Length: 175
Image 1 (cartoon, rainbow, N blue to C red):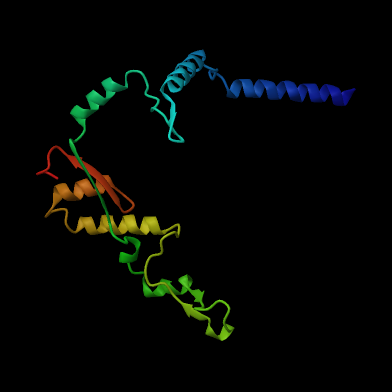
Image 2: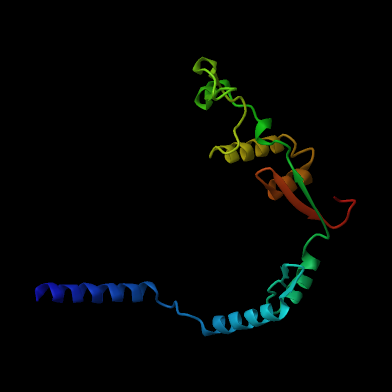
């Protein structure tokens, strides 16, 4: 009898705990209505031709107004760039190369004595510290030119993600 009573108390305590944790979080009935409307719009826009479905994007109401407000705030000419082989452009210091050792054999079915040991000399793509090393190196490099090219350095500082640049200006001449 005591076990049953304690289980009920624990169950009651857990229920109260979760009610407090979820305070103010309730299922919103309007989300279901919105989902229904979106699904109906989807159904009215889907078609099948030449063994392939064609679908429309699920636009939110009022999206056109948001786009018009943004064409006034966003640059009119966008551009992208990529630093070619960005990680390979940065040399790894001689002291740290031993931790990048790897074994290589031209012929995996050949004799073991043909296995050679190599060390990486450049920053490796895929190592957890590599994106930091790349970003810090780029920022360090930009500091060297901030006085000579302040606008370009600011744009690069704000628009680079790893080795990709996405930015824009108001006209082609500025780009």
